[in-house]
Image (cartoon, rainbow, N blue to C red):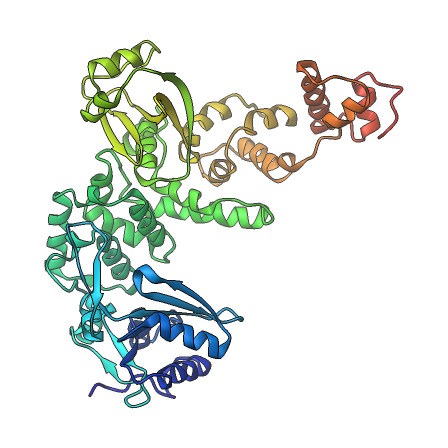
Length: 508
């Protein structure tokens, strides 16, 4: 019999304790709350993520509870799991106890029914393989079949079997996350196994989305710099792309991200700024090729494009040209063939002999380290499209040139024209950089806070009602009036009409 750790005296809120008692009283099948809730209960940390494991049909059990309590039930038949959602928002996940096997490293697991002890032994780390019984008889007793409590006391992160990081490479990121969050230490043998699995290119066997999601979870933690330094110790970034350099003094970059996010929350509180993209800017600092220090420490634009493609980060593809030539065999070779090279050269795209091709999710990535170029190729029907990868994360590269066109005397309309194409996230990140000239910061801040959200006094509909036909001159008139509005030369619709030479027009 294990220690009773879930009692009236524990730190769990009374309503959660009562809810767990009710769940346990509804079945005679072995049933436990497992995982992070139990781990954090023992660490005296708050965690209200309730994961329940039952020996039997978890979906049927959850459905019965939902009908009885009038809670919403979301079923996941493929995985034998279900989620109960209380009208007030409380969520409880139910799963059938199971064991797992992996067909090959990196594959999703094959599951089969099992006992709760089997379910605990299939988990990632010993500190997550703890359970507390919920049945009325034995309620609150701790179940520990893998010495997880001992590892908690010793501050160890230990995987449960020798092939763990090969079976599921995302556990590399989770080990780093738990080590950093709890200020624990990854077991020495686990560190060796992580290095070994990375040397076997294990990250190449899993999707970019899964890697991206794990990095996002790290970026959402409190101890991000500590975790990133640990990823650097294991050389994880270069395992994803050989030219991905993250600075050892990453803490300074992360502090800049926090300042940028805080600035946006204060000054752009009603705006939808993608703070996740700003966080990624700390990991993918764009190289400024006019700056020797940046050339040494930054990530070149073509590498950011390749990483964006690999990890399925937000981006869009801009078509450069198309070809009806059949490139299937050429793209399958893994390197740029003569035929593919000639196709690109006809469009003035020159590649080195070492340019490589990688296939993924119905498209191909051409990456040329020597020429510092990356392109994506998509196939639609029998047509191949060669595309440029455009992402917020490379916007800083173009922003250097844009800011070079500004001067301390630039008019608001000129600032608007130059900054409007720039992603807001890149501008927010630039605003807080200490090396940025103060006059540039002032212009960018004025644009982000004021000019960017100004609505034109004159619209296309207004000009149509005046009898004008849409065309180039039509849009020129709108732009001309809006520039005058931004520069403070006009402030009403009637003044806009008069500015454009329609002095007899009446306000509409």
